[in-house]
Image (cartoon, rainbow, N blue to C red; front, side):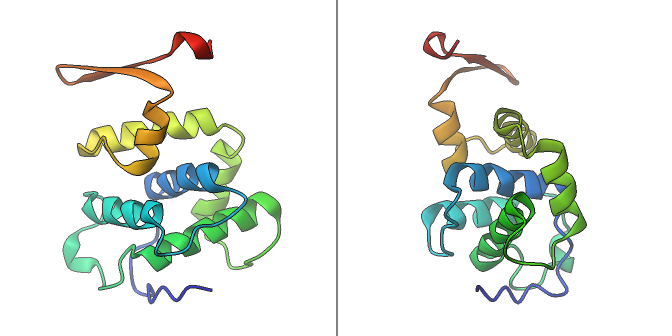
Length: 148
């Protein structure tokens, strides 16, 4: 089990948990380890998001081990097996979005778009299945013809 040393860090928000759920959906049933590039990339993204003020973040804020741990929490909510100390937002996110991975991908893209980040690993994977055109400040996402 990873050691997150995250006590004292701000609680995960719905947006942060949605980003983790997107990665969980891409990797389930296996949870990648904290050295996996997808975990490392999500950790880096979470650290760049302007959600929590930098001055209240501890050194281990959203580090790869804490991202791995969050995915384990989401798996526990999804399967009812595993970790028992689950955050309220993990349950809320799973109840609202757990059965709709397409919505999770879309919301995750919107979170990245709002923060100015488009090209992280999960987004690249999803964008391969969509036609995406950037026109000014708008992103137009339409399903490719072979997916209709």
